[in-house]
Image (cartoon, rainbow, N blue to C red; front, side, top):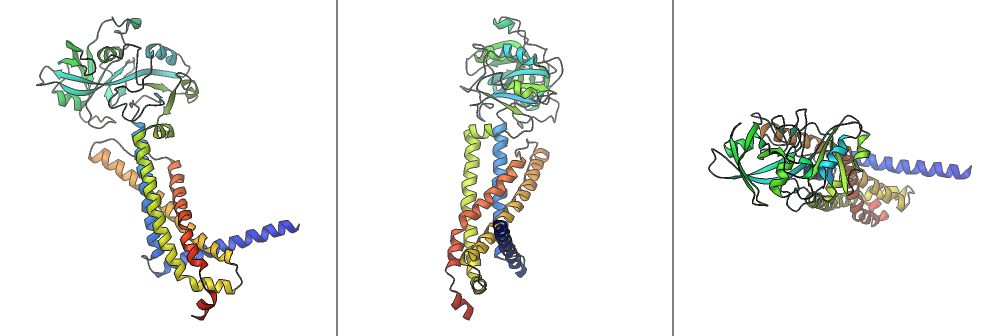
Length: 422
């Protein structure tokens, strides 16, 4: 029974110490709004908010390694793909034998639609155009149901992929191209116009076989902003770009009504990862150089700045609290307990700053996304997840831990007798 009593007394003592630290922290805010404690909380909050928002931007950049589709629920992408793969797919990792794999994926119970996606850059000139322009071409296998890929509707494209012809690539060329509004403006093209199409990678040029099958409605916004996009049949883009050798594509878009499909999709290809709609997948962030560099730099800068500021402020607080610490010593509190009060005050201040910072980050991210989407017609750039809130508070507490040595040293040098004579 004695050990239980001892444990209870120790717990009660530490509750009292933490309570004393909390009350001391609150009392420091009685001197007005702008004092050392509130300013420190504000600085920690701003740095944590900056970290969370920048990390959210990194997550948004990493997610752009997938081509968005309104109907897609999952994307199958190579594990080593980076955020530049979807912009210029030159010598990037690709999936092979994609037509056969498409049939396998579509046969999975619960999958309602699936298409491989190839992203390449083409040079296109319309019949009314003065010169060829570079356009981001996306090759897909259109389905029977209308859908949008990268903001461009595929309803103008014939279903299927006839040019593939069971791997011989000698089937009929549809010559159909669906353009985004930005691409149509760039090319000065409209529905029904003939196109001259060439690939910078292979030098292949096709005359008058291609024409504009559809143009996105004015105001339709692609997730890639105002980037000129052309959607074509997969096999035709493979032939133009040289990806027909190996039947290559960059990723798969999969539509399903069953969440249990994900486990089966993960076994479709070795060396791939499955990204879900709206999910924050840490793998693209960790495997993409640019987002990892951005988030890592933000973490380093935030921790250094926050630690220095918290250490300086709490050192000044400990200096101002010397007489209070001397009174605690006179009351019989051990040095360890007095230092625990200082530590609790420092960590409590950092934690409060972290919580405020996470709230500030959520508001800032929502405002930034609203501004970009409504005022500038750009895609939402910040992707937040509850784990980022935990991350922000954890980093704030880490700042407090790194800052602890300085205020503890100041507090430990308090001379009790001298302070009591003051």
